[in-house]
Image 1 (spheres, rainbow, N blue to C red):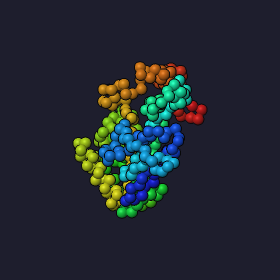
Image 2: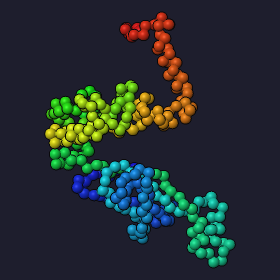
Image 3: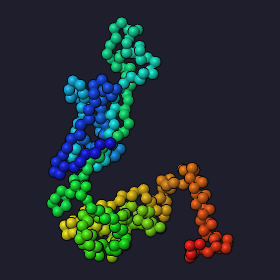
Image 4: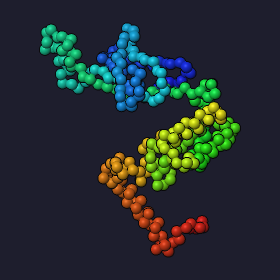
Length: 286
């Protein structure tokens, strides 16, 4: 894991080195999902860059970093497995009086390293000044308890006065049957409760943008929120259309014991009065 700190208004470079003679030094190629060609980031799309001689003792591969985020990388190369049956014959060529480099090269097989990661810190600014990550003073807030966005300004002013410079909003999307912000009915649309009047998805996004601009310019607050795409409510239309996307007893049979225990606890709770027990906890003894 590599972490690259941000440098405001500047780009930085990352360099990978392989010592010549090491296992991975033959046909070494770096593969990374950092968009080397400047294209939009796609997590599953890996770009290739060849290692070149940096000196007589090492190979290098380097590129400039111009956008923040977490990225993956690995190195592909060629080598000979010591367990190969034809290793001795291929490398020493005892059976060939005039071995060729091509014949020797064919004995090498394609390999790759495990996937590793590098993280590029974002470059944050507030009121025209750089805001290092270590200088963030963050407060977590629940949007559903703040009321409609139209009434947020006093709450934002109070947070700013207390010395916070960033607000962490727990998910603001439409909630499911449990009413939990971490169990979403629709991950792609903001909750209706955040708006006084009925609004389209586009109007909601516009109002949120206006509120974020007010946070930055009037109250000197940055904002961040959770992206919980996989927190889907049991009554979500999407989940009903794609039941295979959730855990169930067909695609996850190992959960049967947990399901049966949960079902038994529900029945026990429902039938407490049948056992002469009060369903309400009123005393320490209860």
